[in-house]
Image 1: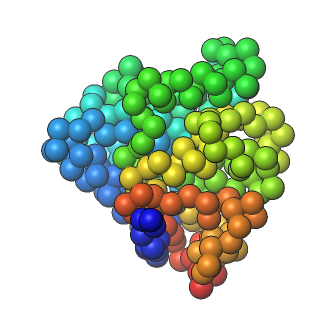
Image 2: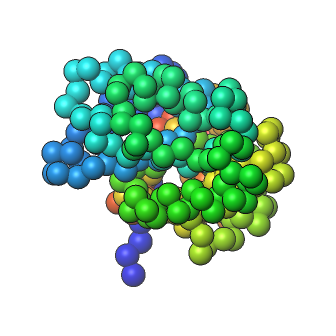
Length: 247
């Protein structure tokens, strides 16, 4: 039985340094995949550090070798709210990155909002079909943040969604963080990624990051981030503050 490789940890001096490094690595990965004739499939995340990374990607884009019209973009999770809500991860990514670099709208695969699906359950079912239809049951790259409680995407400690193994996406109706209704990829879907990159900054993430990187790994029911590994690589991109409790 083949086991995922040991996670790699990169610690950077500041959140700015972290964003610059991750953005550069992101652009290189896409260019390398396209050089082999592939259309990269990447799942994006949201949050403050993700926005900084997205802005840096947009800055690098004009001088890169990436054909941004030939990349399929997905999300690991999304808030089930109105399409124009500032809570939408996709809206943030479009404004700071996707619309700037010229991504093909047909290749931006947003999770359904309240305008596209009548219920959060219907939104999860619809997104699973989108992922399957694009052939993205395996992503080239999945980027993930880590919550102070160790949650990843919208999979929270102790939630029953952590035990779903036969679905691509699941509805979340009682998120401890507002808004309460969300759609999330499952652990099994997140684990079908060639590379998984965790990005975390700030002391508020330090305890969760430290627990997520203990050996042996903790129970994903307690620290969901510990339940996600890339098939070929798992990298934790951290700044000094978020890395302060790494074993």
